[in-house]
Image (tube, rainbow, N blue to C red; front, top):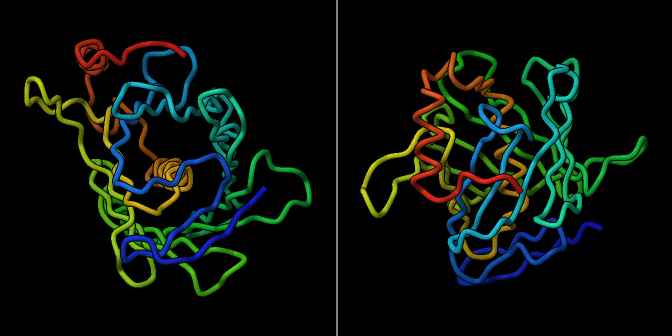
Length: 229
C-alpha cells in the first residue's frame, strides 16, 4: 500500500512513499554493503547505526534479466519496493512499484539518466507518477560513492558518501558506503534510488573500480559487519 504525505517537518516537506516506519525525525546514517563480490546472497544489506539490519536485496543472479528487476525487502524479508528497468530506453529509465510488482500494476515513480552522454557522472531525474510536480535530482559520481539527492526546491534530502571507520579513521572499500537520510525523507525510497543508480552506473565491482576483493572483505570483518543474514 502506498502512502503519500506532504507536510512541513523541520522546514522540509515530509516524503512518505512506503508504509513501515522508515521516515525519521532526525537525520540517520545507514551503512550499505554491496555483497555481490564475496557472499552467496548477491545484492545489498543495509544496517543502522546500531548494527541492526534494516533493508536487504537478494535479487541479483547470473542471468542478465535478473538485474533488470530488483526487490527491496525489510529485515524480515517483506517486500517493500520493486524497481524494474523499462526497455528500450536510451536514458536507462527505471520504474518503481509498491511491494512486489504485478502484471498491470502502475509505477509510483520513474527514474532516468539525465543525459545519455558520458558515464563519469550519475545524474538522474526522478519523477513521482501520481504527482507530476514532485521530482528529485540525483547528482554526483556513484562510482566514487559521492552523490546527493535534492527535491524540487533543491533541498538536500539524502547523500551517499564513502564510509570511514571511526575507530581507525580509515576509509573502507567502495563496497561499503554510507547513506545519510534527512529528517522527513523516506529511507526505503532513498535505498530504492540507490539500487537504480547502481544499475544505471553499471558498477561491476572489481573490474571497473579496481576494488581488491580480499581487502574489502577484510574491511568488513574489521568493521564488524561481515555476516550473512
